Image 1 (cartoon, rainbow, N blue to C red):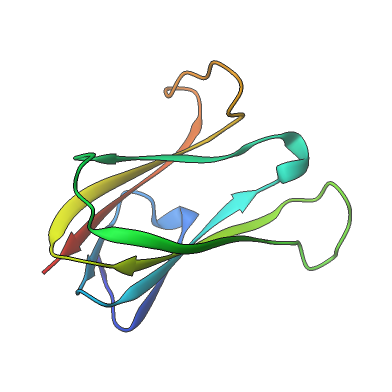
Image 2: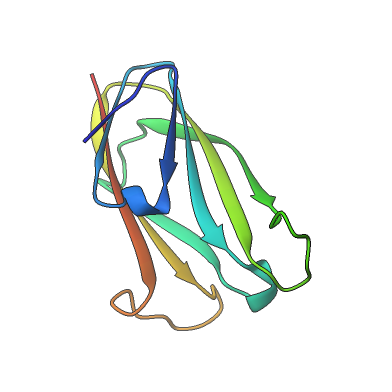
Length: 114
């Protein structure tokens, strides 16, 4: 359980936790990524029609050592739009491949807005 104030910072290791937010707050989700491999994050939500938040920006942050081929962090900044509850599922896959969800690296967050 993550109680959030002003701007929450959520990491890949927080997968499975619930974020308790309020309308107007922002949260930053940081996930390991290496775009040189062709892998990236694809997200789904449950329920699909629950538009609790909006992604404000997504950017890639290179590794501090700056070496080519070394992974970094993909940062997603979201803003809470309305009350509700949604489960966000992220899958680290190559979007063009036929990927089974069971074998993909995954994250799952519940966002609950009061």
